[in-house]
Length: 522
Image (cartoon, rainbow, N blue to C red; front, side, top):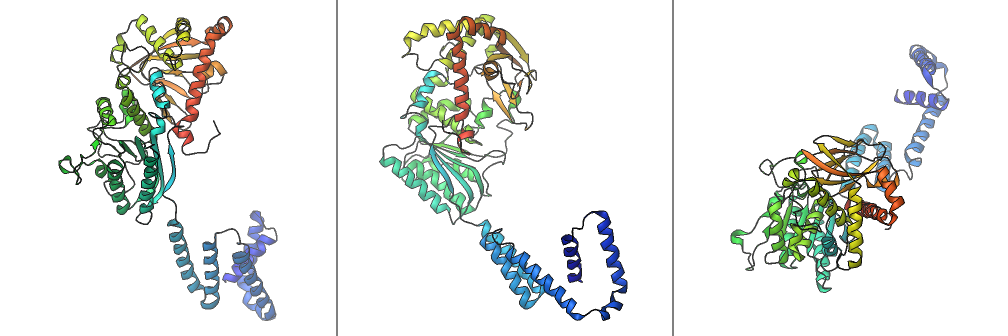
């Protein structure tokens, strides 16, 4: 019956059968043969049945063994031959059992297929975090080869970490650090990223916990950051790796008599400085630690971390962007701790202190707008003394052409796809940019310029922008004023072009664009 059913299906397909009429016809013929078939079999020559079976057998062999060449890898193709041989020798039932065993074996072998646990090793010299508007002095520190991003070393891990490959992982990290030490280029910050790690067994988790101690004690790495990956609640293992990475040794001393590593309290660095509407939970609400940052004591980094600890909470780095942002803060604070409190060219107000911004006068708001804009344009003020007067005069002119705007929480500044008609500087408050199709969002803090690409290039709005704080004050330069500025003061207008170029360059170099995917050379 199996052969007859199969032959009918093959005959139906090869004769071009399709549609409801053809299907009903073959059903009627099959039903008729079911009734009269036994009585007419005596009149059919036996060679016809043998020919039919031979044809079906050859067709099945060609379809299963020959046509599948090159469509499967060698292990899967081997399973097909095993099933063919078992069916020929022992029959259908044994072949079914062999097929199940072959499928399970193939899945197991493919699942444990060897992958290098380290996807890539790179410095952060070409990477940028989402901290867009750092002051000129801070940018100079981060661009310096001795004190900046080049001293951040990133290990990106991947796949399954288990007892079979974790030794290679730890040995590779130690070899790389030893080479850096011999070259006199030992990193200040080491980031170990678990974003692409699918799972870990307990052996791998224990080895990672020991690796942290080795990096601090043997290679004197000042700060190590372990990134869990977003939206999965911690490291992909049952072992409490976050707690193990964060735990100090008893009494604060190690077996070798050295002080144990200090631990930074960092709860979601991005959310720590986000507007209240974007904060997901407080430190008392979180159930578990999901990442780890540890610092070697008695170093510049330890002193810098204590300064940063005032404005951060928890000990979480869920994304590489959070880790890179904190590492940049550490590097800046090591060189000039004052920049953590005063990040603008004018130190008359604190960058992170926005509580008094609600009661600012219009003159004070304009002063802030000028400082923010000057901060975006001024890279090396000490070396560009001749340009300082031009820069100050130009900023004064640009801000004088701007109009003050005030928004309340959930007010929409513009919607995705709308025509671009202005550029805005955020003087106080916070905004959030949302891609409507995906729901992806990004907070936009005060001091940033928004809408610059649409104003200069004429593109439609690429995201929806809305106010996420109770109040936000912005200063806006509309298209008419921009055209007048280009006509009357083209050199001043070129400064706005400089802001556009700087923001686009930062986007191109953002860690999300240059870390996981291949990008165009820039």
